[in-house]
Image (tube, rainbow, N blue to C red; front, side, top):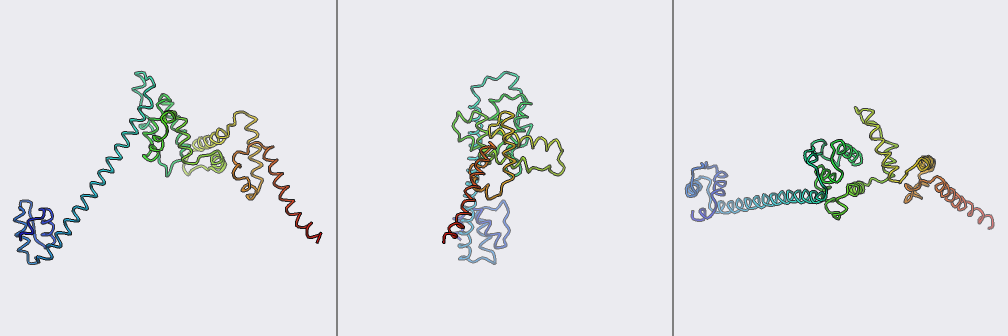
Length: 285
């Protein structure tokens, strides 16, 4: 029985349970050892082997618990770093007593859900809410970080400090992360439909957001630029997918209808000559 006393009380109690022997909290190690020894199911070699297994399982579970604890601790530290960096980014701003008492945006909006929420719509709503709450723009980054999941907040925090302070830079980083290019906004604008149960006003808000993302991304600033964009877009709707694929790398940036028309004419001219030439060669033969 001497080898039994070398193991922990917790391990001995588990072995006793497996042998069908009842152990009460008041039992000492020596009491549990006696109960195990007196069990009708006791076999010394089995008990030795089983205790080794029980001890190893306990140590493995303890290691997993330690690892989970370390992961959780690292996560909390990262959150603290992000919060600290966000505060540092706004240290140069002078806040009045009234701005200190303003509501935080996280109490006005739900956290961003990257699986179910459009980032462009979310940022537009965020900007409206912060303006309505009277939050200064130099505080927008810190407010936005509090609404983002950790993986997105980490992307922002890795940006150079000067860029991280500017909301416009942070907005671009997030848009690039979700590949929100002008062409993406154009497709969303032309194909977006009203969600079941949604108000028509919500659809207007969403379409306006996609339209703004499209024209702003292409730096369209006046009526002439907008007119050219609309005409160019109408031209694009008339071409085949084969032609579009040929100009794929520059398709989204072709917003001057005359430039676009010139490229299309040139493409058809070259393509037409390639079809004619083989015939002429055959005639010469």
